[in-house]
Image 1 (cartoon, rainbow, N blue to C red):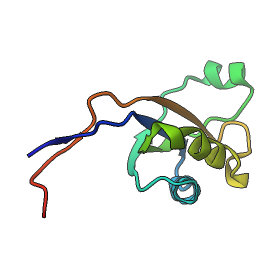
Image 2 (cartoon, helix red, strand yellow; image 1 turned 90 degrees about the vertical axis):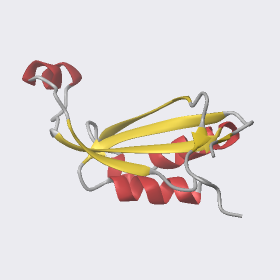
Image 3 (cartoon, rainbow, N blue to C red; image 1 turned 60 degrees about the vertical axis):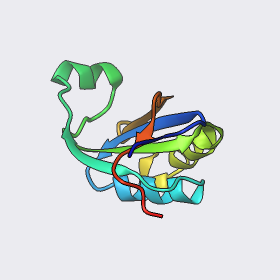
Image 4 (cartoon, rainbow, N blue to C red; image 1 turned 180 degrees about the vertical axis):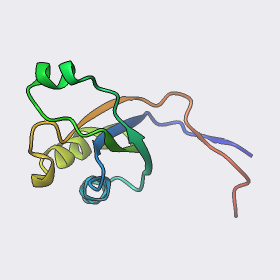
Length: 110
């Protein structure tokens, strides 16, 4: 049985250099997020892109996806942006988007 939420949810996506997703998740939890999903990823920037942005781009990435209630989104993003380990240019990006039609899957335990 699927359970559809009635509240507005947002998907926060954080893409960081490999090894920093756990730090981002810890900050997100302190700001009220429940949990997230980490996916190993690889950036595809060209050498010219790195020069354009004025930073060294590491191809090995981790992508962290966190679904949070809309009212917690700004606090979670600010907590991640405030991490010292992500203060170096090129260390990552964070963005959010509405999570429309969000529902849980599987049979619900009672």
